[in-house]
Amino acid sequence: AGECLRRAPAPQGEPLPYPEGRFALLPRSVAKGFPAVWGLDSIGKVLPGDAGRILIIGSHGGLHGGDPDSALPVAAAAAIFHDAGRGKDGASLTRLPVLARRGMPAGVVDYRSARIGDARSMWETGWISAWNALAAERGLRVGIAVREAAALLRRGN
Image (tube, rainbow, N blue to C red; front, side):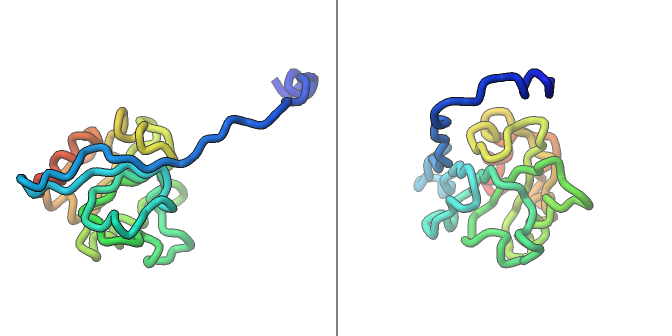
């Protein structure tokens, strides 16, 4: 394979842009008191207005540089990240206990079920591989689909 690539012609032109996105997955239900569910391809797309929402975030669930302040820049109703294969010593799970201490249920999506950096993929095919203690206290469990998890979190279960 390496030899074939070495002999292949050099690519021409520029790659197509792939902008990171943010989009509503489920609207807020004022009548029922349910928060909106938003998909964000990266934690860098979190905005102040995302406070109180359930966020499906394509970034890994690890703290940046081990800094607890990097867990999530807003007080979301809940957050689901990507487990990125969990990393060495569970590095991509380190946001979960920090968010539990901040009163936020949080979990991660199994890398085998959805693409990292792609909240739509997490929403469509993702299933949960780990939860923090606060989410577990609400009856959420490993193996459920992200859509089901969001529905349970919206109802406050």
